[in-house]
Each structure stands twice: as structure tokens, then as C-alpha cells.
Length: 335
Image 1 (cartoon, one colour):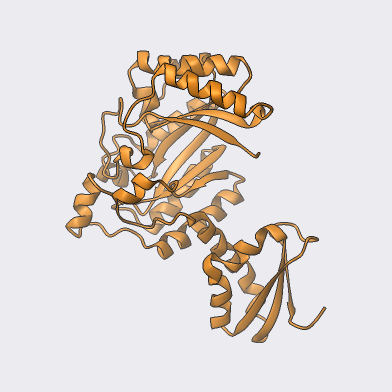
Image 2: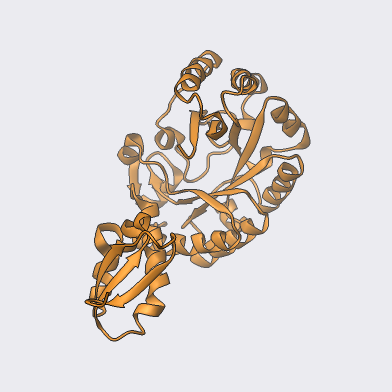
């Protein structure tokens, strides 16, 4: 087991804004707010099931504006979580909130209740894009909050969106670079999706907003993965989780249940291209680490078909002597 989250969603509570893309009931599949009793019961069951993996297990409160919900409600949810933290059943508590919902006082409270990681729904570094999408905060709010979080000893996570209304690919690349400069420990990248019952759905229906295609979003996100890898920042999520409620409410945008795999395949294609395309066209064997055969082949063998269209018939072979990321190319028939 690499990691485990016991997640609770607190949707549409406390946030004074309704962003252009926001319909959290569809995103999370949740319509109600967990009670402290439900949190305690769930954690008790999870602690028993995860026994022996406490150093890998986190309690998470997601929903985007956790520190903006009524204080009594927030503390009511944190109290049973802290109880199980104190019992060393879990390694810590992760929350997500808005950049404008962080100050020294709230950080002091969160630390007291065992919170260890804070993720900010920052989305973009462009104030024009943030304003158009009615985020209600600025990039300067993100910078200030990120600094406070790191100075207070919390792990910092940032969330960004690609392809938002009013944003360009250049805006997204700049956002990645500026977010990387804030030195977060983790990143989440979400290509923008159009959901029912949102302002964005209205723009989409009127033709004012055209979302990215899967191909456009994947090519861009592959570049973003390169940026964050360069800065040694772990991207812990790329694309929204596959949820039945999400698929039922989706109107448009680059959604795919294996979106990250598509992006990673494009990165592999780009890595191999300089060597392969210098060789004469023909048949080749491409050796990769066993864990990367699928990534190298591409979604539905898209990389294999791409190379074939260029005149290279490539057969992919697992080689246990190679490390992930390494590869060898040789002509077919040569051992």
C-alpha cells in the first residue's frame, strides 16, 4: 500500500462564491454534510481495516472551502479526526480550502487539531482569469497563504485548472511556473470540465466558451508534468476521479477516466522521439522497464500507431534490467 486517504466531502458550505465551474454535488457525488458521529464511525472502521499502515494513511476533508464553514461545524468534524490521530491510527489530516480563507489564527486552530497538510484551490496565477471565473480571490492571496502555510510547518498543496474560460495555454504554463516557484509539496491538475447547473454551462450553451479537447488538454498537461518534475514537485492527481454523478452531469470538456495515462504516454512518446526519428525507417524493438510497457505503448496503443504512421514499426519489450524512465532501441532481429 503506497498511500491511503479516508476522505470526507463538505460541499458548498461556507463558501461565499459560486465559481463559474462549480457544481460540487456533481464533482463529489455528495449532497449532505457528514456529522461528527459519521466521521468517528467511518474512521473507527478504517483504522481497523488499515491497521499496520498508519504511516501511509491520512484523513482528508475536501470540498474547497473547509476553513470557511461555520467554526463550530469545522471543529465538530476535526474533533473525532484528532481523536484517531492521537491514537496513531492515521498519519495526519489533510484539508482543502481557498487562498483567501487562510490566516495565522486559523492555522493555529488547524495545528491544534492535528491538521498536517493544506491544499489551496488556487486555479490560476492570472487575476483576469480568476475574476472572469468569479473565484473571489487573487494570485496575491495565493502567494500570501502559501507563505503562511509553509512558515507554520504544514505541508502545502496547490490545485490548478487548465483551459478555464479566458485562459490560454500560455496562461496555464505561466501558472505552473509561478505555482512551482511557491515550492508546494504536492500539486493537483484539473482540466476544466463543463457541468450542468453552472455558469460555465450557460457560456458553453451560448457558444461563449469552448472547452479543450482531450487531445489538447493531454498535450498541455504533459508539458505541465514536465515542469513540476523539473522542480521535484509531486503531482498527486491529474484529472477528476471517475464518478457516476460526474459523468451524468458532464456537458463537455476533456474528461477521460484514464486521463493521466494518456498524458504520461505522450511524455514517453516525446522522450523517445529524438532517438527513434534519427534512425532509418524500419522495424525496431523498444526495451523499457516492465512497469512502463503500458505507458510506452500508449492508450489503446496510440504511441505504437503514431510511430507506425511515421514509418517505424515498433515492438515494445519489457526488460527487468532497466529502471523506470530508461529505454533502449535496437533494430528488430538484433539481440
